[in-house]
Image (cartoon, rainbow, N blue to C red; front, side, top):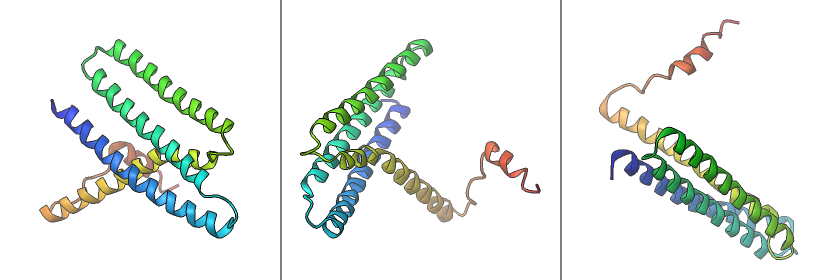
Length: 162
């Protein structure tokens, strides 16, 4: 396994763990909101929707990981076509889940499903934040200053005088 593939597996593992944390927090917050604001509503449909949305997000992450590993060894045109096909497949699966939940809305909450689907995005933000903190700590321990911003960020700062 080369360095890029190993890093890809490490990142995917971190994202899965962050997704579990995010889903647990979303479940607790959702239960608190349901039990305090809608005391007579059933929390089970929300939890089922959260599990369905979180499950499809985890499956989409696994498909993305497999797609990236496969495309590392392909030529550019084939990799581009493969990436587009996998992208369409992942979003078709998400749309299919939402359509099924719309038909089963008395048993599975659509809001819970959408929150579960968005858990992957929250997990990405969480992993990015944790990575920045680890990097800052590493620089502080080594005595080096933090890295300078990219040139693209610098271009935005050039117009501060306006």
